[in-house]
Length: 409
Image (cartoon, rainbow, N blue to C red; front, side):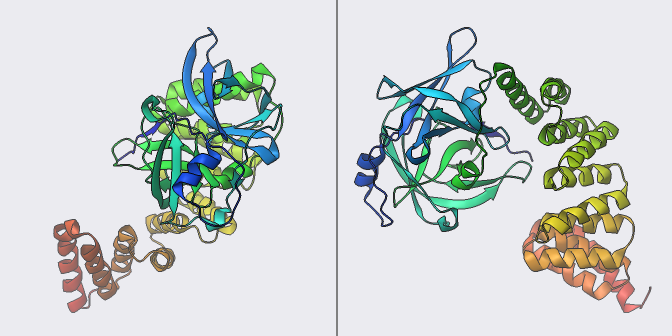
């Protein structure tokens, strides 16, 4: 079932320049860092305020970091700190796919938040958010890191946390108990209970900085963002139109071809999907998302051999990619190459002993390879992991047991 992600806008405000590596109290977190985040208002092309959020100042770099979706579809941004306008130069960095926008500041007369070491972010550690959920400024909440997750297409990693946030929040800072920035808040799961997510500091620091003063280019980036939103809504034809506009300005952007290819795939126009995904790979031969997506497209076209080749390409780049072993195992199964399928599903199970689908499919591969005893073992493991499969698998188990007892090949 598709999970619906909702963006939220927030205002987090911090003050001070405390950079201790030791834990500090929640009171100190609030007082030392509440002025290091500013209020951001997005103004549309008619001069009206269309959205509100916040941005986190990284003083040492003279930059402000926020979410791209706050700016998307608008003409300009108004930035304030305690109702005092903050002068900025231009947008100097962004990644629409990861929803990050970086703005260069004219001055650096601000407190400083030290970026955390991404390797130090652990599930269970305390985190703090100070902001304006539902317009209630300077609201502080405390929680923990509850997971490191991949959502949607599985291509981006997020920090999941429990510090309370509400609609009306985005782009704000998430701090650890040392007062270090671990990420910026970006979205929540609609049907969940306090399931909030932040873009990690690793993704922020990985962006190459430049200048985006050309309004045509910024408009193109908005086309890209609009295309992604329409795709998520299942409006694939409309999404393609916006990707077309973007590609007319940026004809060599591999990500654009990848995402337009996904929209073609959503329409079941597999031929055009393959063309776009192949173009993305040609532009960036190590673009794992495009290679994986093309493999999945070939799979849906029942071109098993081509699918295997793409999944294998991903594994050469990422040899620990469990999903690719599983996908390739399915492709081998479709060609009745049972030994190769069993090998891939076994790799998946070694990496994740709770992967029910891997046991299920390895059991099928064992069954068709006439190894009924091992098939039964795998299917019984499936039932243990997921009792709802009992009725379905018991029929297979009984049949396999009959064949095994009579030594039927």
